[in-house]
Amino acid sequence: MQIPDIIIAIDGYSSTGKSSFAKLIAGELRYTYLDSGALYRGVTLAAMEGRCISEDRAIDETALKALLDAGLDLRFVGSGKEGALYIGERNVEKDIRSMEVASLVSLVAALPFVRAFVDMKLHEFGSGRRVVMDGRDIGTTVFPDAELKIFMVADADVRARRRAAEMAAKGEEVDLEEVKRNLLERDYMDSHRETSPLSRAEDAIVLDNSYMSFEDQMDWVKGILSSRFGASESE
Image 1 (cartoon, helix red, strand yellow):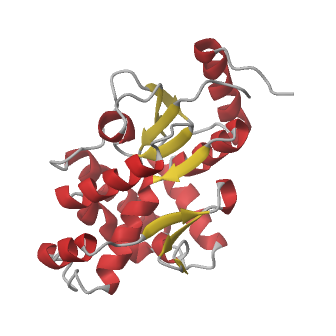
Image 2: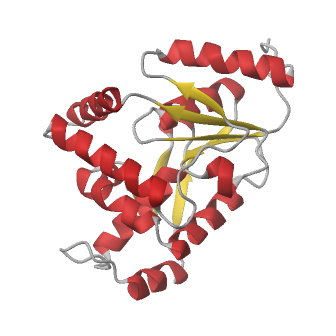
C-alpha cells in the first residue's frame, strides 16, 4: 500500500500480538519496524548480566544507571520478521524472550531513567518517520503526535495460550497458569507505574483481536489506512 510518511503507534497489553501485527504492517507499507518492548527487555537482560538485579528482585539503580550512561549499545539489525535486537555484536533476540526476563522487565521499565534511555533510542530510530512502533506508551508518551494510534486488547486466557504456544515452539517448558499469572502481573504493574503507565491515548482506535486472524487484522487496518490517508494498493 502507498500512504504518506507517518508514524504508526501500537500500544496494548502483553501477548496481544502487537509485535507480530506491527511487523505485518511494516512489511505491507515497507516501513521500518521498531519493537520498544525488545529494548526494555534488552535493558533488563543487561541489568541481569551486569548484576544490577539481586536474587530477591531488588534493582541496584545506581549500578544500572551507570551501565546505561556508559553507553549500552542496543540496536536493531535487519527488518520485519528477520529483525533482531543486538547488544553490541551479540544477537540477544532469544535471550530477551525468556520467562526470567519477562518476570523482571516491568520492574526495570518502571524506572524513569530507563524509560528516558529507551525513549531516546526510539526517537533516534523514528526521526525519519515511516515507522511502525509497538509498546505500552508509544501513543501517549514516546510519539503523542503519531498520525495513527492503535490500542490492542484481548481476553486474558487467549493471551496466555498464545504466549504458552510461542514458548513451547521454542522448546521451553510451559506452565499455562504460570504464564497467565505473569501476564496479569505485568498488566497490573504496567497500568499502575508512576512513569508513563499503560493507558489508551484519547485518539487511539481499540482493536480487540481475541478471535481475529492476522488476515482479519490486516483487513481492519487497511480499511483505516484507506479512509484516513487515502491508501491505495501499490502496483
